[in-house]
Length: 87
Length: 494
Image (tube, rainbow over all chains, first blue to last red):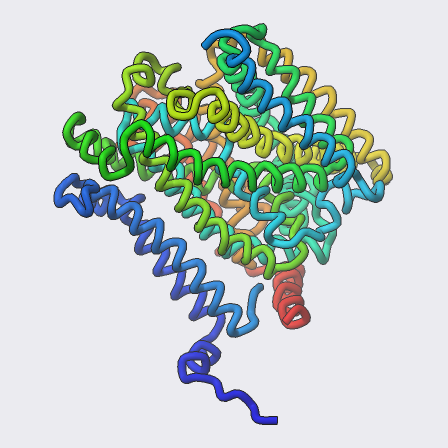
């Protein structure tokens, strides 16, 4: 039986420690979150102009941030799935 | 609306609840008279069943009214709801595996069970149990009142004002008593599927029919509203609300029961993976609907009109049938929250407050009986109180939430830090709570401090004290052992 060769990306994922992955993603989530919980940063994006696809800029940014949150959790899940490391 | 048509929404609502009750009494009865079955349904549910139970933490029936109400008066500030639920999901992803593993290995059934186990302190568990129940009670009464108002409006004032306070809790009571947590999870699953379908299809339809679609709605908003209205009007307050709500959601008693019902850690994480997809889709649609209601005079006439705008717009776009379907969403959203609260309160009172404090303990059967009697008595009492005029109810709600967040350091830090101790939790509470009390009472502090609430002002020192006191002592042997258990369980499961 021929063993399926793992891609470089999978090998890299498996080579990282659990702590590196968890902390790495946590930093990602916190960076997005800061735009909503740190008022000086909130003020940077809290603007109507420029309109993006007809949306006020803050609305576009909020939807983008929600989307990035969702993507982040899904990618984190996939990474843990590759490593078979869920707890 | 006159004649038969005015009864269509109520007919849809009652038809749905009768069908749901029959299903639950057939499919979701208690299988064994054990605490494992009654409190956490045997820890057997796959992720797609757990999903809507967990989602019920943030999407209550009142949330729909809160979003439209906030949109009318605060504009884009209303996005706090979806934002904090996404933040809370990140917390859930990191904390739920440890909670679940300890729960599985040591037969934990509730949040006070976890606190008592983690800090090896029965007294701390009892304090958290009493605090959790006292803080949650006014919120349940408010939920019952919402049933009354919404049913009264739904019947176009044909039904007596307070009838909803008795009918809907009675429906919930039957399946909670008959099925325990199994009944709750099944009910939330059916409610959640239906709500998601109606929200996704219904809101898109309403926005299309009333405003001509999202693009046209945005053009109308930009033309009709001041530009500031389309931004977050007070970023400081906004950040405080997001932080307090996301941290506070893990201090509700029912949250831990919702975690314990999953059959594995992987199922919990699958839940966390799926929830943002639903939250983002619902959130985007609700933003358009809620902002749109600010353009309609019938939704902006009064604070009450703003809070019932969700139903007003459904009626305007789709007549009594869509109104009935939207009413189902509002009611099931609230019942999905109240059912797991009732179950959690019953479990916590009978086990953590009564059973664990009686010398020699009590049997599992007796614990379940006490739990059921408490739930029954509490429901009758809460229904009666909900019929009274309580002018201070909203002040009480805010007051309780300011204290709820103080449970967070003890719950959360102890989960990740071996040094965390019962002493650190006591010291944190002893410093944090008085600061919150002073901040709430002092005119110099006011209700909000640069946007930060009194609860947050107190919980920050609470956290600092917890960390400092924990640093002073080395982790106990027991703490080392229970943290090792998580790692060992992980190896076995993988």
